[in-house]
Image (cartoon, rainbow, N blue to C red):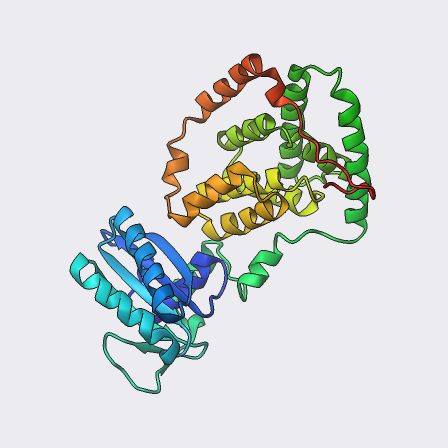
Length: 346
């Protein structure tokens, strides 16, 4: 779709982020007329924060070879003027052209390029063809980031208790098998359970609490997690997002990091940066040292494009994992969280 009027830019941003931003600085980067990146920062307060935001943004714009940008400050003109002015000044020697430089509240916007009315211009996002096009393309925009984050909040109620009981049983089962089961057993069982979960999810069949629990236990093996990651070419990205989103919400504490990271990987690959970041928040909340989540978070923070994932040779990764089982058989074993006295993972 084509963006021309200021309202078009205001209308498309919530669909790019997945929610309506507030107190934010949003920069849309273009290269050869095509949108190549959308970044959002918390609205900086004070010169130090503003310098950090500008430095980060300029690095990202350079990496994406942006030749034009549109900038929107979400907040009152007094709140947004300092960072917008500083960004405009910093861009002057770079040659990057500014399409739009806007401040906006929920009801009015101010263009800092044409110096319109001091009272701002009223607008209605629903009148923009950009918003209509986004909805027709299947995009949606939640009221705010908290509402977006809530889409991955842990489930509650009877299912939570059922998964909790099933996880205790699954952990006991795994602990009993560890002394005797071969590494090949764990790898084959892990892949079998992952494929079974995909089959049920794609067919819109329920995944039982017992399956959620056993899969969560198996995915504590980073080899099995990596094998699940290589299936991004076997099942479409939406299937990965659907399955790992469900497992992330239903898994017990101590077993969330792996499925949440798998969700983040699939979301990142599809260009859904906000979903990837929320998923990584869940992963790192469950295990702050989870290395794959930390690696993906670094990629997001530096705005590495999804093409980085697309260029990975998934088939070769699968072969490397198979070879790793032979060289380092213990690497495939599950790493079970230590339970506390009340049976919950430590």
